Length: 258
Image (cartoon, rainbow, N blue to C red; front, side):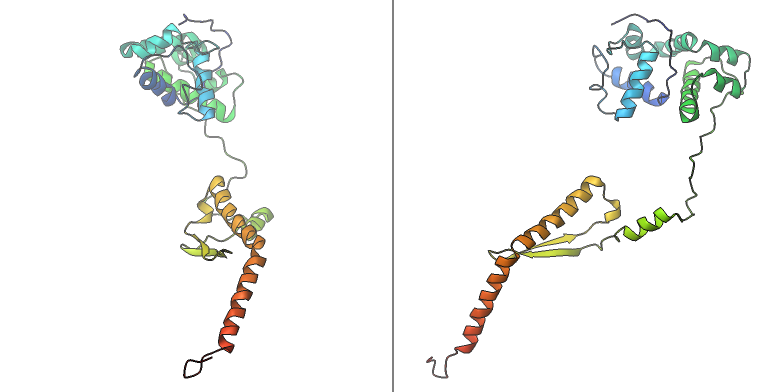
């Protein structure tokens, strides 16, 4: 484990405060500490969340560049009674400008501007993280502080509006209708006798990419098999027809003699 590190070059985290707090209190605090924190240890999180957690831990000096756990992180995990004070110390160390604004009842705009280089949703997430950490640690806060509004997504529409762009019209035209539950999609006759049927009982719109590939792969295999063995099946059918014709032409008389 390492001791506290240099605070220069601090990058404000914008991971969820709850996610980071639970990682420390539940994942690390609930089991023996590993020597380092890496993506293998965080394999229960998505890739983007792993990256954000590692960035936050490094920004606060809680892990080294190689993931080695610091003494402060070990205390956060193993000393629940000390967590509030440790987070208060971290805020004083890494957010001095924001805390100075808080003590002077700064405005929300001043708070946002103090996060240099951040904008849009990243700024909002960083401010939300800071304010939640302040609340947990009992650090000074301004009554005017609040996170920025959620950035609007350009081109977004209300749920009631219907797409009218040419692209949406094309997509509606080309999209197949949902399959009827229990509907048979095809039947293949085997050259050796017997049949294989494919019944579909799903809504195609609800399938993910892998499921769609699987379903349509089955259909393609059936078509390919049917095409490959069509001649052999036709020959067998022709022979069956010939046998039926011969049987109908040669029939026994009333006495049973041919």
